[in-house]
Image (cartoon, rainbow, N blue to C red; front, side):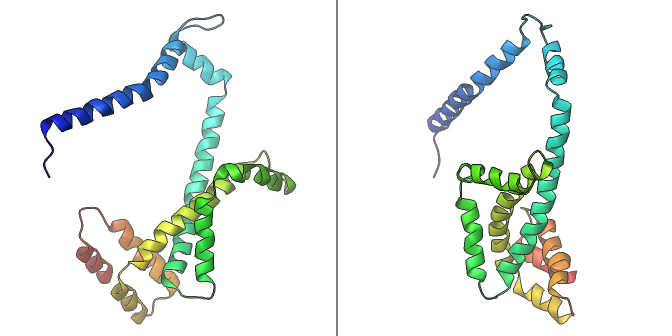
Length: 200
């Protein structure tokens, strides 16, 4: 179905209008931050002073540490749990999967207060782990759901060929399935991906 030039123009006008509405508060804050006031040097020096007074360098290092920890741990755990739930059949696997779904659907606001008391009871308040562990748990829930779907649709012939070659489940995961997923690009076809996985 072809879209007329008038409809395209209307779409761009609406998008630009919503973008202006979203960006206007940010622009006003930025302009206000450049102004002069009592104790403020004015201009871009305001940002330099705020950076020092607000200890943004320390907070930036903490944010980088937490984000790196969450990404690495959540990725590894999501790959392993997604592989187990997507390719293996064991007693209680459906219940475990539904628990991960519950972790996706549970809003963080509903558990933040009891979570604080639990972390305080085990002495983790005011630590990196108090920030990282809840984020890891939420990320693993979503990552497991997503990777389970990928492993369920992965090529059975590649897995069976690896098993015939004597590969264990651990080797199939890290030497066959994960590398084939990392090499896959949007432009490559599924047949070519299977061919590269078989050759490895």
